[in-house]
Length: 123
Image (cartoon, rainbow, N blue to C red; front, side, top):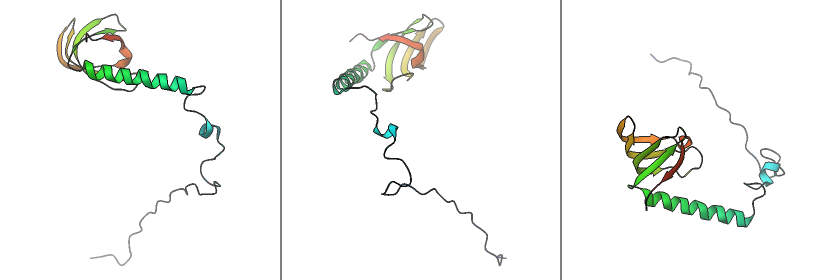
């Protein structure tokens, strides 16, 4: 049997977005809106960063499937077959295969980027 009264349905009201006049929403005069992505960065500095990033990405693509040696913060030297790495800076992980450690060999592993001080790949 159906109810004679319809069930109430809640209505979700979203905030109003910015309008063309700029009276609502984000301020056009905000310091963060008018700032550069990297304060004090010049076009020369940006082009050198882009060049270094391109070289790093090419290195990662050439290193895939090659033997690599990783030096960890703890002082360990680990040998593995380089698989992949995230292109993001910071603590991006390294995916490796056949990781040889003092405790044995792991078929596949992820090394935290924050733990890796350096890695070398013979090209």
